[in-house]
Image 1 (cartoon, rainbow, N blue to C red):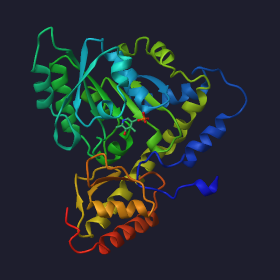
Image 2 (cartoon, rainbow, N blue to C red; image 1 turned 90 degrees about the vertical axis):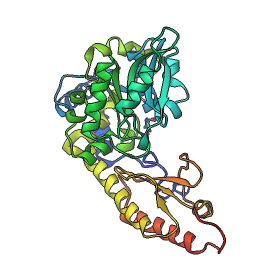
Image 3 (cartoon, rainbow, N blue to C red; image 1 turned 135 degrees about the vertical axis):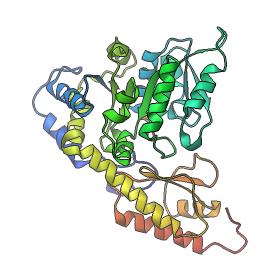
Image 4 (spheres, rainbow, N blue to C red; image 1 turned 180 degrees about the horizontal axis):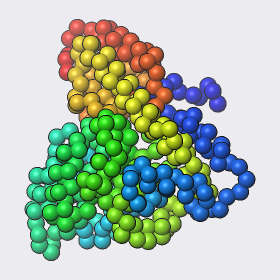
Length: 356
Ligand SMILES: *Cc1c(COP(=O)(O)O)cnc(C)c1O
């Protein structure tokens, strides 16, 4: 087992394991028998914790992953002839293998360009107003990712403006919150300030990247939209029978603000990583770093040299653009070791190997 273990990487926050608080909560839940399918006391407790944290009555469901959370949430907001408006880099568009369209029986995703991975009120108005005839899929939902796929954060004011635009156009508002906690601590806001108070109808709240093993929460602030959502989950194979093991880890995350602590730690590590990388010539930080990722443009031979040294990272942003991501368990030492390898790779470049 041990010999197959990877050293801590900067590829994604889902490379990290389970945080101790979540693990303890799983072990505590492994006592005796419990009712299945979400009828257990752990699930009830977590749902109530969410209601306290978001300071509102809401409907909470647990599914196995973010793709299911987003897809099923969007399916519950749409009919097959509707459309979802989002930024072109959205996970629902680029990383879910068409699951939102599949689960909604054909709802179309309409994308718009937008700086820093965001959709703007103007972008929403343009996309929604492009066509109003019967031949065009009827705009129904605005989907935003908080924090975005490019590691930026919508400010509360930006969210408010998006909420108003959506309201004016009679569109529902979905938030992909795979890294919601990272955005929350970055903004120093309260959960309600950046969700239902700005008009978010449903939030897909990520737990995996924050420190649990499996499971995302789907939180409906607009409770009417949660109608028969339990059937949708069951039909999609997303109703966990031993639900306590999907819900209990959240007790670990939500107690004593562990989710915020984990997010703050990851964000801080990314800040240090960014500062250290800025000291190295030949690199360029691509976007404002606001959460736990740093997007850095590096010469291709430096990327290759780092990969040869065993570092994993994604370059989905395009040639030369690497996404580096910190997690709840990243250490200062990990950062130093990685940065030293980057320095070495840059230093050992031969003259004429080109610039960015
Ligand atoms: C990780 C992630 C998800 C969830 O992905 P799954 O692999 O399906 O759990 C959703 N949205 C964003 C923005 C993500 O980064």
